[in-house]
Length: 113
Length: 112
Image (cartoon, rainbow over all chains, first blue to last red; front, side, top):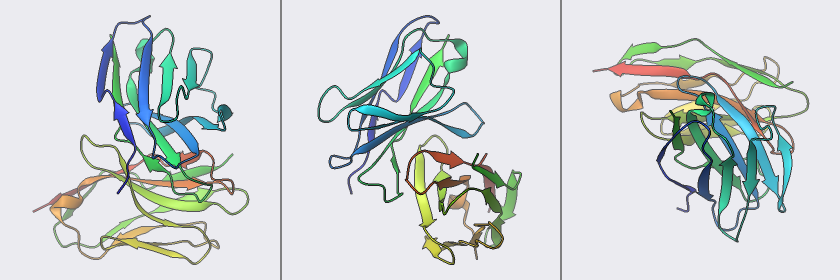
């Protein structure tokens, strides 16, 4: 069964550094999402992406965050200058159409020191 | 805005016990409802879903029925196993399948 993949599984970085989290959505999917889960807390929506542009974003997704689909397969989340409070698990998800079933990747654990 | 409320955890049960995890929601329109499961150290996995009122989602012995009149989507399993120990998230998405709204999660521990 096709699946969403994410790399790296764990990223450790220093405060103020830039990080790029990578996702490979399922190949025929058209809608892409990033979520985050701070340890022990709920999963929070960050951003949705369709047709090479952001379709919706939450309050969390401020100017420090950006997303990109640089080629036909990858979907990236960039945090320009990481803060301690960015430490969380980041999940990518994708869907083929608006059929409501999002497939989630295994997540990238980001630790900001 | 849309929201999802789940029963507080953790829930601790003995093997073969009956499980219910309550979930209620607030939403405009006609959301689709989901249960996701997160096993220790892993990502989110879709457990089951229902896209319209009175639909029943089922998978791996788990069931949940979309109750529009009570705005609920309670998760049930007749006989839990140790391997069911995980965090369970109730979630909804709007008519347009855009962003998901997740509940806070309920941690289930099943003891042998």
